[in-house]
Length: 133
Image (cartoon, rainbow, N blue to C red; front, side, top):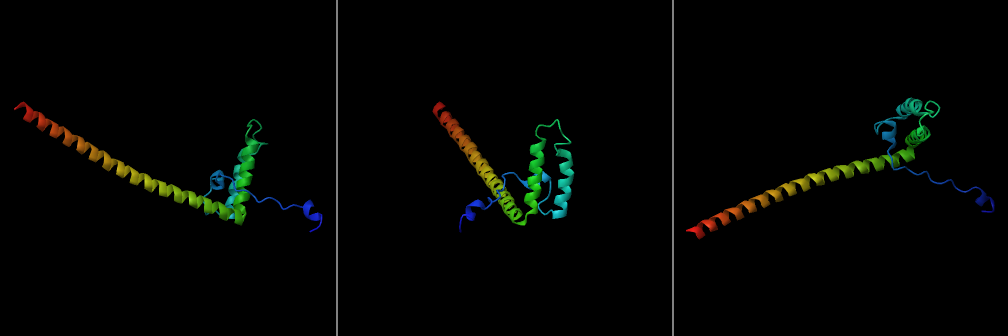
């Protein structure tokens, strides 16, 4: 490898952020490159730091918008993002289904508890009636 190997290290792998680039650009997951570029241009005009000198976060917003565009235009990174978005959607659907099942179980349990309390009160009333006679 020689000494030149250490002079030119491999660039780090681009990290995929936790935020959703589709949401940042307000795009559907099936948007094509033309739609991504068009939406980026329109949004960039709104958040560009030169157009918003009074906004202290304008530079961050613009950088995030640019990063979202770059991520979605890279086919490999976009595939990873799509996998993550799909996994989140599946997890949300699974949690919603489990929440429905939990709600149903809770309602059934509460109904059985109410019935048991009514039965206990009825037995108590019968027992008091017998004791008075």
